[in-house]
Image 1 (tube, one colour):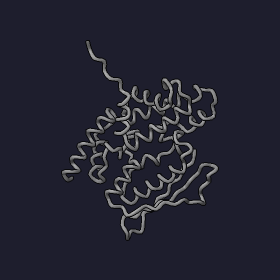
Image 2: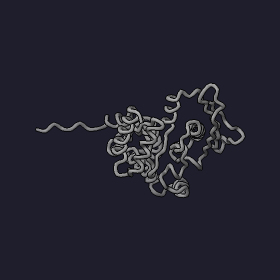
Image 3: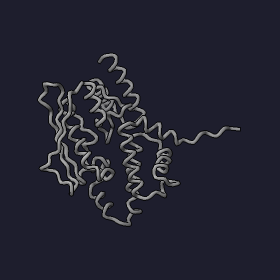
Image 4: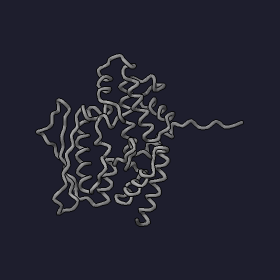
Length: 254
């Protein structure tokens, strides 16, 4: 390990201990050091996430790795034979060319309402494309980690069963019209990304345009949960800065 990798590894370990306090084992830290040395992933940039005790690489992390490695290009195309826009089913093929003479590394990605989180229903086409690119990049650069975006609905909801999701969708009035389900998703995001719950609630109320989060309707809350998940994955540091803007200034002591 060179000096630069060593510094990044120490920074990653320190950040990981703060972000996932109490959830890291010595083995997981060793894996993190290896991933840092081999691929240059940065925890500060959310290249990696710790979910259910395992490391997952993110789409942003894979793209940064491709840029560092001077990837020559990525070609993406629909596999129209297997696509059904009416049913919300999409399949893409991605080919990564590491160099001008590369024959290409191929990956396929599919998405439909049955294998994506409720938070992102309606965005199946974009998810399928992202999954295809991620698989092709992981093949091209020999990454054995699964990417966060490839997780199915049950995995992305951290162990909640699909039949529970279905019953929540089919219920019209039960559980406050599904609101507790959304609160569970919000609490999961707060734990995963080590966010301040009070600031998240303040941000949510502002996002929904209501005096408090409790007064927002289900559609607004679902939109906020999806927005928060994307922000936390793509640029956590920017999200933290945004949340800090909702912190109340301390009152001056007499």
